[in-house]
Image (tube, rainbow, N blue to C red):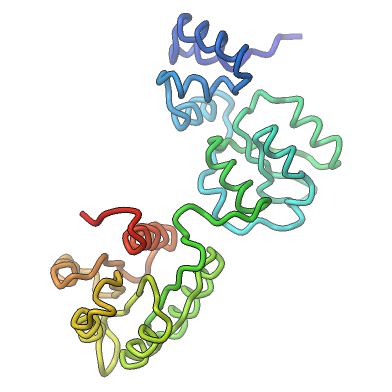
Length: 281
């Protein structure tokens, strides 16, 4: 039976590290007991995303990112307790057709994979993920900590007279941990800004009657609302339109139909600015 190669040996054979790097990392591991990949990262030899890419290619495994954001079924969370997830740096992605899909940072940890298969009676299919993503997922779904940048308790006002867009966006933002209030018209939006005191406004620019640009102008003229970041949403996906909106002072611009993950990243950025965590460039 062929001996299974260790993680460090694989990186060495691939020319990613040299023998000196490996010896130094193994010496530190004897003291710290940290995963070898984490030690390589701390030594500045290689970053965790590079490690993920190399291992995925070496073992022909799929990678998974942003595992802390999509909903995870309770049935999957129940098969692995939080202590095991933290200790083994694994996270259950879901169960389907008697198969447990598992995020892991170490595809060479066959004992953990075999143990989970034995204890659950499920086939275990591993997906590679970086340790920081797994840790965030464990914190969110097991320990119920808010996501970085979600600003738990933050209120977002969504203003759009297209019912499907508005309601769908509100539901998805609420699933991310935000408090969402909705408005259909510009006049309603102004009232809800004062009543709800949102930290961010997502504003459709082509509203009927009082359009988004007029609403924004009114917000900017009031000292109580002028500092609230406003992200413009529009189906008019033209460079001239975007430039005009940004020149007016809108914090950002998102073209419709939008990619939710991209929109979410811009929401987090705007909230960080709103709460003073980052300065606007």
